[in-house]
Length: 603
Image 1 (cartoon, rainbow, N blue to C red):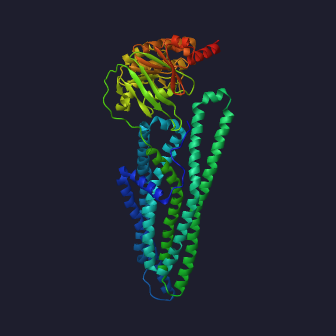
Image 2 (tube, rainbow, N blue to C red):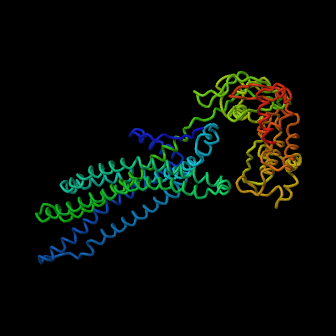
Image 3 (cartoon, one colour):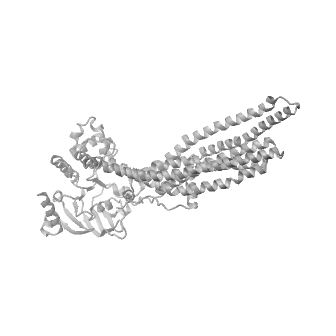
């Protein structure tokens, strides 16, 4: 099945970007009180930013007047007592501003961002549990990892940037603009005239960097997939001496990601220097104009110094906002991917009627139709019935639809037509959890999670006692090797990190199915790729497991299902033959050809 991505890479409109920013704040509902506190701290910082230039202008004006009066021989009051109160207030203003900035930064970094990102990752983890199997089948693991790590981290950082940009930056610029115009409208207009140029420069450069940010995200997801593939298939790569090939694949992917990231960073990095250059030019023009006005006597030194310092305070939030714009391109892309994931259609839990606690085990397919793609039908009007206690073997060539039948039984995919019934009740009228609770599964590909042996066996029945776990393991012929492990049933094992053989893993999954005690069983070929002695143990354990239960066996080696009550021969999604092993051999049809071909290969 072709892998797909969670989101598309079409260029977002302004409306879509604003919608994403709105969702970012909506996600921050649980921490609104911390955001409100941050806004209050921002207001204190702004007040200090507006007050400081005015105080510095007063001190400078007092010193200038003192110097002019002394130079002309006039009588002057002592300078220090005149300026000391204002200097103390100025120092206090700077101190308060620094302290509040540090407190706000700590609040945003250690409280808001952490709580924000943690909550989103928990939502994504819960979302995965509710997604249909088809989504997992068609989405690369690396992409999900990137969504939950890098993308969510970028979103957490964005809250800090948005607060500073929208609250502190814009409000500070507005108040300083009013203060400058009130001090002297001519110098104020010089400063304000360059603001549109800075904004236009920032928007143009940030827009140019957007495609490269999207390309970088795509390549990061691909890089995660390559790393995950290399790790999970480590033994196969070693066995076929493919280390160099995988290293080259990783290097090519890494280089593509590096080039895209490099271009995005290069363009984003141009924003702040460009704005800084425009502000510096404005600062030069402002000083020349202010000096000329002062020399002409049209403006006091105090007003010139005040406006010049206001201009510096005005340029700081502009540079901060420019830097924020460059970062917001990455944030927008990351957030769109995360929200696309969170908005994926969920699996319908189907709150249906309650099924009897103990099923008899009769399963019926009535005119079942299904296809993975609308234009490629796979199963058409499939009809058969499994009576209680029967073993139904499903055989056929690769791609015939054997595994699909199992997926439909488990409710992993919805039917396109027809109905599946258990004890006469349609499974569509049961909840998915209830329907799946009817089945036990032993698959060819074993799966063990990181935990103790006992926890792995009790996976399908967490409330089982230790005695029940041991009894299930004895029935599955795995108790003997479990007791040879370092801590016995308390030994930590896992699917990726374990010293258990393939046969021992399979015996543990059989013990898991025995302990779960389900009336309906789905069995894949469980004796593949094991030694003869282990195969005998597995077959004996399987016989115990299957006794008295309705079983659906996907058969790869036909010699293992010769004793099945009924064999369904599937070809292109249809049952072409059915009957016992002897009946099908006597028919000399497709099954007989499959059996003969396997026998010939065995010989």
